[in-house]
View (spheres, rainbow, N blue to C red):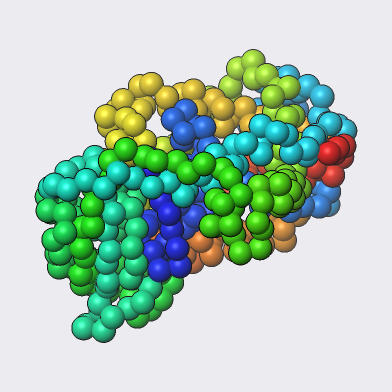
Length: 386
């Protein structure tokens, strides 16, 4: 998918992947087979207790949480080294080059072609949006649009398809609630006045040089100065994500020998729900979301990738539960209630109350909170270098 060059005027037209925290987490799991993307979850936590009784474990502190597992996680997963794991935060030359390549890609230009636009093409278009005859600055801009990608508001790409370059079109699209976080636009019909500037042909990547640096930065004048800035930026990002890096390293040392039926089935539902949530984020149907990730339909996804992704999800839960058992990690009733309220904030458009949200997703929320607690413990005991 073409990298979208977003700015303040256009970024909200594109359906944001960061709309819902739960969608983000679940989507990362289900998209791994196709996208290999990672999602950084917020990490919080205090110490907790795991108590075993006849093969059933209660995650509790001062007996305030009575929720239980119907299996012993250590019977299903082998835990490798996890205490004091070594994590490098060093920015390598490869990391730097990847960042430079991304920046060059973001600043690519294209051969400007004339003709009639078709699905699958990337075009350059300018546009202005109006609500009840009033121009709304947040809906105005100029950007690249990949026709048929589904990245833009429903109906936006379709109305720019079949248009001659240089021609202008006027069309109306409905803006879903929460798209702009602006009550004067969200939930309204926006009339767009758009012009197709050109069809993008061959991509031309700029040479990474002092002149290029000066063209994209007011502060830096040379590639050496800019490289130093990028290294500092990347190192700061590594610091911010070090807890996730530590957990990822630990997870690689773990091996699931088998999977509890109840957990595997729950993980399948969770992975599928990730797609359904993304359909809501992209303002499309469940049937339309799977082709956006490279599948013919849900049936193909279910047949090819659902079980492997569900096993990856289940393995992560088993590892966190086993470590929680070994290190006496859990959470209090108060912490769980606070966690539910926090997660509900991103799902309030789908549930009438936090209680309703908790009831529909309780087991998932319990697994997620325990997982975050374990990640926090791992991060606090990790050894960082670089």
